[in-house]
Length: 352
Ligand code: PLP
Image (cartoon, rainbow, N blue to C red; front, side, top):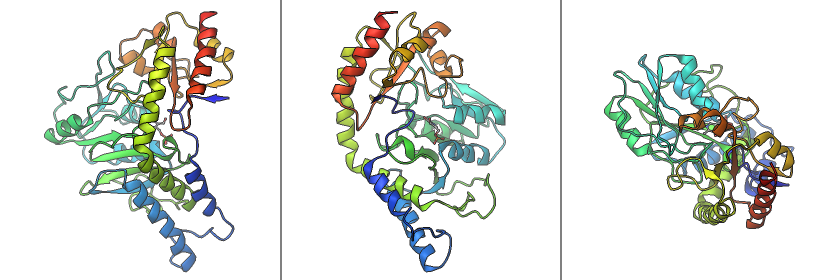
């Protein structure tokens, strides 16, 4: 089995697994919000994890643990003060896009054919929140986040950065609100966080104890510890991981020379290879290459039958969008795996 779906989720790092196992131990079941000795020990593990995650985020804010990034994004968007419109880029993850559409009074910021947004795009008067992701999950393009933060500030709006695909890989961009998720940086599924810049006031969306200040619910020390350990490992490995991904990217690009690349080659996280080939039947390709775990478009869009809104936003027609595959690789991918997968995929595609 060759796993090439790192944008959907990443393998659990051994460091994260070890930290989690400690907090799944028989005597480590206390509620981290209890004031007794066992509770305080669990709370200390949560706070260590908070520090480890915070170390990957800008100074001057606080980390609020959530169940995942979708919840963090919902807290940011639904809890954001004011009644003005919300601006979001045309390639946002459904966590942002669907929330904006559900809230109403929202408008899209276009991207160009390279999958890049432009912070010079005019914002509507009274815009209260601008949401532009740092790294796109389908095509890997890296957005000009610093420009958007400045543009939002100039317009009197808050800037929300969905940094789910960036955390632990690239330095996270400055923003007012940053959403992240443990399972995209070799941590466990079931925990994310919202970073909130000091001075930003949000309305809680889940009430019932407000253990996290803005968010209610008993935290899992095991999940927090896993997230923290994964963040600490990513901080140590960031440069090495990036160099490894660069080497895989160069190799993979040569092996898939006959395919079109979706999105910018340069303004991109190189662990994402979104490729298309005219007339390709992706469902057939996937069933012919069952040993390779990869995705059609994105994990969210694949299976729905609908062409991806991201691929449509960069100007692809339905047929081109549907002839796209996404290969995602990272820390544990080997050159041999890339070669083997490319041979299987190219053979199957050539046979169509
Ligand atoms: N934002 C982006 C860019 C993502 O890739 C994902 C996950 O696919 C999410 C948000 C949602 O993250 P989670 O699975 O933690 O809810």
